[in-house]
Image (cartoon, rainbow, N blue to C red; front, side, top):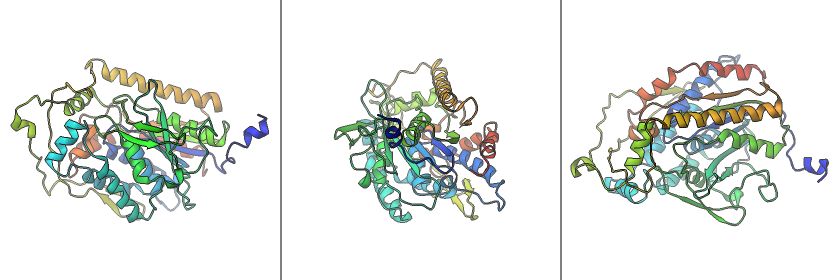
Length: 418
């Protein structure tokens, strides 16, 4: 293939260098991620002449995520939400996916080894698309925002090596026509937003397997079985942009936000909660709903117009204890697991920095990871366990960790108004 033919494969170079936001998964713990992002946007708004607080879709060209990070990517990038709206809808979503009854919850956990059912999730998202007037399909033809590329990743269930597929809001030729791009759904034009939530949310301990027909005509089953090990969602985003625009596309900044790695106690608890039989007496096993008070504090985030997003009322779910004998269980070495996860995260960061340095030069494209080394105890199910008063302690703990947050304005100062 000639150089001219090769260049014809790619999209025209963007008018401004790309700003890329990637959002980690890590269980149902998006509140802290949103608050970290909100803090960053507050800092950016101070540099605006009018003090206007931007939405993520006004700042970033690309927003990508996996798992609950994928859900946030769609809400922020496809629905064009500000943080206040996204926070409110996240609370609504956490309430919507709770089992309708104690019996239903038991069935999910013992027969499907998960916490929620896909149908409640997709039904809620379908209602959300009507409420926000987005239309029900992922493809987004809007020209009112800067963000043009939103995608969620999903991991195929049974592969020796991790194999990711992408579900996009934009049109592109995928393999085999574009071997540099990962597979997508069979018919992207009619691929529904609710299905994108389902496929990226399918994960061990949280949701059952999800099946899709892909653009190669094959049926694939998706479920994230890597937990507790992290995904390199930033690498997927870089590969996607290089596949779309070519290897020399200008990039001004890459920001990765996440809630931190799970600690060994949470990993052990999650493996127990999806195993059978129960290891405690039947009375304690069935448990009771955690009582909440109307006086509980409410987390609030204010958007650029002055309105606030608050968590709606909701019932807490019961805690169950089980014996770790399920096929879903994983072995946890209490003394090593956190160190292993940290080494893996450090390896991912080195890979990203190395790729950017080789392509653009050392330090030419700033990369920021805004996440703690280890998430606080209880974080993987933090958002769903306490929909009414949940995460104040956990989230305030995150916001006290300001070292990395202080760095974020640098990335926008370096490229001026680009």
